[in-house]
Structure formats: structure tokens, C-alpha cells
Image 1 (tube, each protein chain N blue to C red):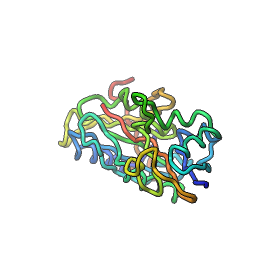
Image 2 (image 1 turned 135 degrees about the horizontal axis):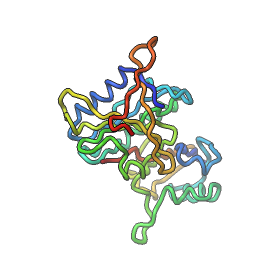
Image 3 (image 1 turned 90 degrees about the horizontal axis):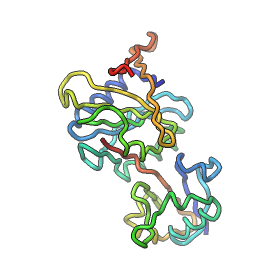
Length: 154
Length: 95
């Protein structure tokens, strides 16, 4: 299960809506081994494309060096699909290189840049096997998580 | 001639989970061959044969002292003692 706070959830959704119709991408970092997504890091989509994303080479190096210096790791690796469902594509699976991360997919196909709900789903991608997991959004530190149901009931 | 090579999580199965390893060589190509000698299998994850020419894989970035080797001559990029070599997989995908 992926557990994240409301502010982080909102930041990912806002980034996806802002960059629509291009794919948005980024990470949420956390202390190594903690599984806590704490530091939101939106990244540039160097491909600038509605069907592909790729981090800029030097921006990516800077990000990883920051993580190594802080003993952090990518807890969430997110990107958006802007015309298809929030499910990892074959390319997403082939290129997934962070087996410890939660891969978050946001689909903006329904409302684009406008207000309105998005599909927000999370997966583990390990050795080309995709496993969907529940997403729990913490509204405040003291309240129990609200479970985000899978919109398709799968 | 020894350089430190930073290994990404996805390739640590080849280095017994070590985050960085030492390698020798005066060019990136020689460094990769030395890595392969000590960590068999890793070379194939870094380079590929493109029409008879060996080149870095499209979805791998290698840096020497923070510069992307694609701007330093690719596999022929010079490496000197004490340099830091970093390998990172692409973070990429798409619909």
C-alpha cells in the first residue's frame, strides 16, 4: 500500500494538470528504507511529449546526488498519462528501474488542465511484473487514512 | 589508475549490493571492460551492439565528474585516476 499525505497527493495532481497535454513526471523522496514519501520533486519532461517522458540527464544526476548526500531514495516515481488510463504502459514497464519505488500513474484524460477528478493509481514494478496497490491519503497527521478506491473496482 | 564507479540500485545484483565499486582504465570503454571482468554480466546492461558498433545503451546515462559522457566522446571518454564515474538508468516511460 502507498500512504501519502494530502499535500503531496495534491502537488502531484496539480503538476499533472498543469503540464497536460504533455506528460508530467517527478519523484517524491524519503529517508532510505522509510517508505515515507516526504520531499516532492517535480522534474522536467525533457521529451516534452504527450506520449513519452524522460528526465533531463543533468537534472537527474543532480537529483540523485542530492539523494545520496541526504541518504534518501525515490519513494514515489510518478508520471501522467494524458490520453490513456492510469496503468503502466509497456514502455513504462520496460524502463522501470526503481524496484523499491511506488510507481504512481495519474491520468488527466478526462479533465485535462481543468478542475475535476483524475485517476490516481499506484503500482510496484519489479522485474517487468506490475502489481497494483491501494493508495491511502492522509488528510491530517492524526486522522486515519481515507482509502482511494480503484475507480474500476479491480 | 583507479576510479570509483557509482552503481544504480537496478544493477547492484552484479556488484553484490555494493553502491560503488573501483575500476581501472584510461577510457570509459576500458573501465566498463574492467567492471565486466569483476562483475560479469554488467557490461551487457550498459552497452549494446548497434549495427556492428558498440555504443552506450539509449536508456543509460554515464557521467564522468558530473559530465554526461555523451558530450565527452561516449565510450572513448577519457578517464583519469580519481575520477568519479556515475551510472544512472533512464527515468522514462510513456503512454
